[in-house]
Amino acid sequence: MNILLINFASGTPDAGPTYRTHHLAEFWAARGHQVTYVASAYSHLLKEATPVQGACARLNRNGVAYLVLNAPAYRGSGLGRMRNIFTCLWRLRRLEHELSTELKPDVVLAATVYQLDNFSAQRIARACGAAFVRETRDLWPLTLTELGGHSGWHPFVLLVAAAARHAYHHAAAVTTTLRNSLEYMAAQGLARDRWHYLPQCPPSAASATATGPALPSAHRTLLAVAREQGRCIVLFAGSLVPAGDLPTAIAAAAQLDPARFTVVLVGQGPMQDTLRSLIARHGLTHVHLLPMVPKQAVPALLALADIGLLGFHILPLYRHGISPNKLFDYMQAGLPVALYANSPGNPVEASECGIVVPPGNPAALADALRRLAALSREELAAMGRRGQTYLTIHHEFPVMAAEYLSLFQALRLPPSPPA
Image (cartoon, rainbow, N blue to C red; front, side, top):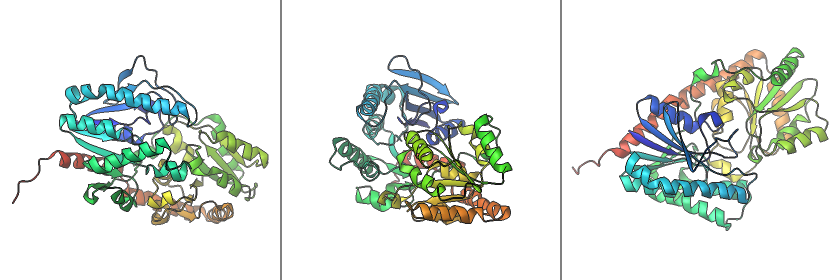
């Protein structure tokens, strides 16, 4: 099968840290399918840009052919980001004829977070008789209006809403990592039989124990000293973005006994200066902000922690489900989780691998951390194993990636003749 995957929010695999679609592409390629991946040279989600001369770089990584579109760097969410988005769209528009006539994919999977690749994906698919599939990991435009606080009448919000509806009406299938999203998508025009829940998954349980690069000395030393002092190590590892409401985590940490707890935030993102100022302003010597580590070093980082920390703002958006990568990293590592979120049926609640408290409530979060820290090592380990078992049963990456292939194959089959 010939698969075209589009994701402007990612670069090549070495650019990180948006790995889901890379893992899918590599899985399919390893099973003999031809996979072409349209990516961007720059996104704020990447840890580094990909050097590109001209309009597009053609690279091969792990058996996947990459078309990396030259797109300008930007800061924040203003005109620079718009220029980056529309540059990617324009460059893909210029490639549509080549992709539909020379590549001739069987399936076109649009996976860029803000949905605007739907139009090109559908045109390419229609031109060569391919199946157009949409992967949705966030609900747009709700992410812009409820999380970003933008007006529903903002021109970009209206454009994103139109792009999402385009997929709901024209895609042969819409896949989603959001368990509770069917009713919302159906109300937007998606036929119920075209909705497919394919959950967020860690690529392999083996990656949790694989030998990766060594942790930076600052991370290793800080965690080793905390361990020697008998402190409970609470760890957040991920992007420092507004959605994660990390000020609530810091406010909760301020209520913890500095002699008993060490709270470590590992990552980078637009919130890092704000978080650093909060830590300094309140004199929280037991709270530390450290740079992100390579994805391959995350298992070694998590192995040194006692509790994984994760949360979100109070928003109706999350009633449709949550599927953050960092949560599955914690669960895969057997790490009990303190989650502050308003998402029914979330994996922590379903697996009983931690404690879930309401979002925006530092006192409740601090209490949850104290309750977890009061458990014995054996009780914490048992809680972590429940998370690992839940992942094995419900979120196996090879199973999900194979289900994608089964879906693609079904979409390519001719319709059955009438009885």
